[in-house]
Image (tube, rainbow, N blue to C red):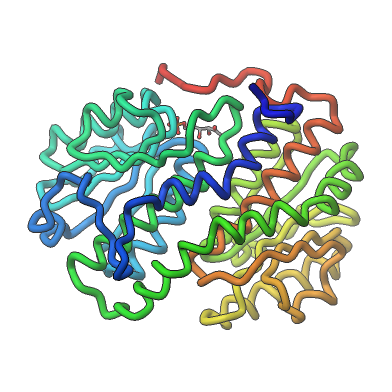
Amino acid sequence: EKGGYDYFMLKEIAEQPKAVADTLLGRIDAAGSLTLDEVRIPDSVLREVDKVVIVACGTAYHAGLIAKYAIEHWTRIPCETELASEFRYRDPILDQRTLVVAISQSGETMDTLMALRHAREQGAKVLAICNTNGSTIPRESDAVLYTHAGPEVAVASTKAFLTQLVACYLVALYLGQVRGTKWGDEVRGVVRELSVIGAQVEEVLATMEPVRELARSLADKNTVLFLGRHVGYPVALEGALKLKELAYMHAEGFAAGELKHGPIALIEKDVPVVVVVPSPRGRSVLHDKIVSNIQEIRARGARTIVIAERGDEAVRPYADHLVEVPATPVLLQPLVATVPLQVFACELATARGNEVDQPRNLAKSVTVE
Ligand code: F6R
């Protein structure tokens, strides 16, 4: 049942190219427009939405953080992403024009369920992004976009995350399409580029041996730090979460711009620091800023592990280890940049003798608050 892999997690990592293709299946028509007919929230309601609130936990929350960048950029609708467990208890401001997006692989996470119940009580419309057909969260929502990743057995979420991201991009692009956006050409271009993402994830998977080797060489470290900017920041958070869960190591993700506000004090000789570098295309300011962050930490002796777009020569001199990923639009980069971090955490867990599919203390679906 593990299809020849030692662990479900390895199988599920390998299934990602197909999973993202399945999330897109039937949702883009021949003309390159999105057809989310299954989203039963009428376009007339979507046109009136004046705020989007995303609620989720753990890895799904990280997908939601990335979605915020995409939704605000493409649709110009203000968007907040919030931990489901915090949302309900702070008396959030919601009304009929708020679209709440609840992201959950299992569809059974109690905190996310309670958040969406609260949102509906306040009159908000709730759209679920979910991987499990007929589970509680989609049943209690106004509409659902299934991710179609297939069953995810390993406790650590991998293919569900990538497909949650794809679904979030679809929602963002669809909102842009329904409401019209000044980024019309960009949106059409991104829809086209989404269709090659599966092949790009496949490319990343084919080049992971050096990442596995690197992971094994770090098995006796105590801590790994992760830095990113823009959509690379939630990717850094996700890389750190995977490492905690699987390798039981101290790992922390930071926004690279926050370095000098505190975290730089943690940088000392030989600390491994993973840096997710945004695509140099389009947002060159961001790119240049992160390159100087890498210089700063390397000057303090950190061992830099840099994830960057293939051909990004500016980072090479400061990368002790360079992991290249295919070129994508800036906002889509998490789809390729997360994969090496999954492989890294899985290999480190194996090297440390941990149970990969069933990490200690964790459950696949958290049905208590
Ligand atoms: C991390 C992980 C958890 C889940 C979280 C939400 O690898 O699996 O952080 O992402 O418990 O679960 P769902 O998506 O089922 O609501």
